[in-house]
Image (cartoon, rainbow, N blue to C red; front, side):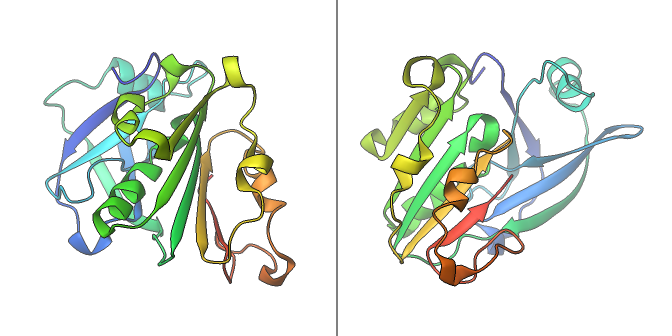
Length: 210
């Protein structure tokens, strides 16, 4: 177990090496009329398998409950994809902000930054330390990762975290919570215009993976 609620699943299957460091999403066909999207969150240099992080939702409509309660080692799962929705752009610096299970698509981007020697920081918020998936793995990065458990720190203070982004910083934000990215949007310079297709047109880049 990675936390009290989320689990991860490793699926065997080839990954296109040209898509390393991108946010890949797969549709898992879990049953008749039951198809869900999940982001890959494994080592982007491991092209032999896919790792998915799945949060057990209390009010699940079937997807997360199926993964947690019915999938077992050796089961075969039909997958559609992958789709590359958010490639990692070239930038001088990277700021990642994740809320809850929104950490999953951020993990391969961090690994890609590490491999390329690019500076990066992560702010990771969650209700409680015990529900923050992959926290042990991320703790190995030391002070570049700031954990923000809500029960001791309150709501993740994005306005303070972001400040005024430098023009050569790429910001990636992901959460399943409504309104999580609003403080990020408020920091968007007027010159970038409206966000379209998940990105602004000029730096600082703002990518919303919600």
